[in-house]
Length: 286
Image 1 (tube, rainbow, N blue to C red):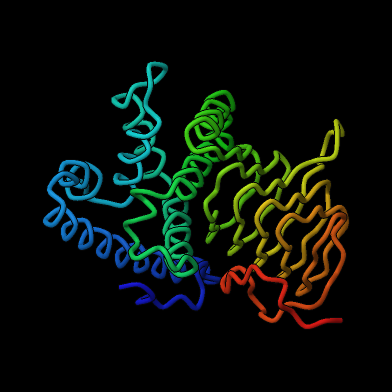
Image 2: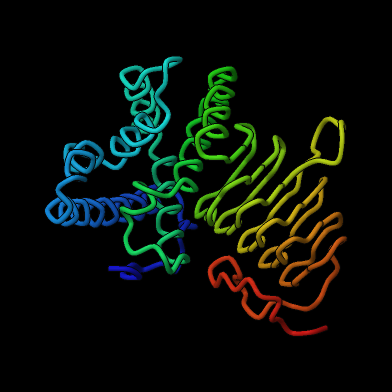
């Protein structure tokens, strides 16, 4: 049931065996809920039963389920599903931290999006989650020096999902891309944990400068629809950026900015705007 999770921390601060235990418990609970929902829907919607059987009910882990879903969505003449599935599955099974990040992404969507009624829905239907999953796989390829293959998956995600995230960008766990269409995240971006980004947001550069030229977005930030954050600016923890804003300067923590160019219009009413998802400019005026 929606909200039936202990979500005090999507990304655990523990280290070593404790962190592994927390991640394993989180994964087991999420996977159990997803399979229960898949079984329920397959019994009620007979035309979806073959799809649900393939993606969920015939799979023995979330890693295999994600690989199955992405291989269906991304397959084409260049690389068939039969080639994609074992490649994606191998990467996910070899990197449990990557799978834990995907669990945190699923939890973030279910907790922040009132239209999301189960953990199964984002994996089955939400292009924002599927784009994030494709990015995370591509980023792992990039880390393994498989740059050309990573670029291939970046281009696939851009073509299929309308989301363009450079595989070299560093994106934390618990990311929610709401609607997701036309989101762009540049090569040297750093996006920390538990951030919410709406459609048509650009985290971009300002020209041909090389090196660190894209934004740093700290944890708990919410970026409204159509906002453009340009250059090596830092968006402080728990800040909120109003829809349609153009941000060219650093944004202090726990402030709300809006406008073209964006200026501070107040402090945020919440310590974690990403979780609250209040896209109005309601805030405490400075």
